[in-house]
Image (tube, rainbow over all chains, first blue to last red; front, side, top):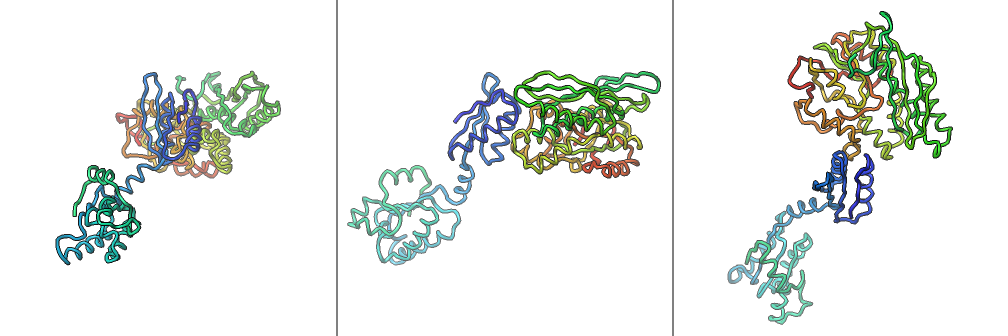
Length: 195
Length: 300
């Protein structure tokens, strides 16, 4: 949305901005065109008091364009940053290392992850890893994964791998079935920890 | 008299000088009677800042007769007259023209003994400054126009605006006051800079400067009149900051019908302050000290 508040005396630019922001949907932009120092300052003050970010761009003809971001984008990003690491845990097998110890280690690893405030954004299970999200013998571990999912971690199990091991989709007990595109996207665009 | 003083002075004889001033304002409140009172108090103020007494006043009116009934004009004039009477003046006529925007104010004449004129730029080093009304009126009258204040706040603001500086002016004459001005369009910093002139500097204690808290709330919301920003940009280079302040915009706020700013000898300051408060200037406060000239006029 764009409003023109040129040649308007205070408080009109602020009142017009207020009205426009009220009408505007969340997470969208309002552009306010003004042509006096007082209007620039007042509209900026108003936006910041409402908790909105704004940026100011001086145009050639003595006018100034103020762009206000309606929404709490920044606040959300900050809290998400605190909560989630830009990381993907890529799990290729149902064990860490070999044998019985490997199974115990995997269980303990995923359980311990719950104790951390900052969690990875994604956990991707591929190849033998998909046993962990489907098999009845892993119910304890699946409970832990559900808890991670509740906290906002995205959990994917590779669809191709489920097919390969003849595991029907309804056996999946936590998270979603992932596709190759999503997996590659995560591997390329987040830091990846491979287990 | 030089041109930066509050009113024009014409000496008639060795015992008498004529003091003249004129001011008009657009409506600051919806109630016409109240607007009349405030506009009159605003116009009369310069006379009191000079230490003079009001003799006569003439109404100056710009009125949109097509869109407002004559009774509105009648109420405005009655409001004005009530204030002129309150300080012992007489209304001796006036002039009305048709204007799209309402305007009202007075041309006022008063008298003062030529030796007892209070100048605005003669404070003595060591004197303390007392301000008799709270700041924030430029921001708040803008907020009233925007309909952003509660009725109770508006009432309080209208009362302060309509309060005459007459009693304060009479009280100051009993004390050792070296300079006086009224705080109006240039804000506290503008009128203080005039008071400091090039001879002294004035050091403020920000915490003791009276202002209405609604004014800083409204300032945060971006309800600040252009005049206040003009003051800020013009005066900033005259002010030295000793610490960072959040609400310093209030110091530059253009006042309507502001209080008197008096420079008083330190020994007299507590008694003068007490008498002002007892006379109904409840926001009165000692806000600054006149000191030796520094590189800047004002220190906050």
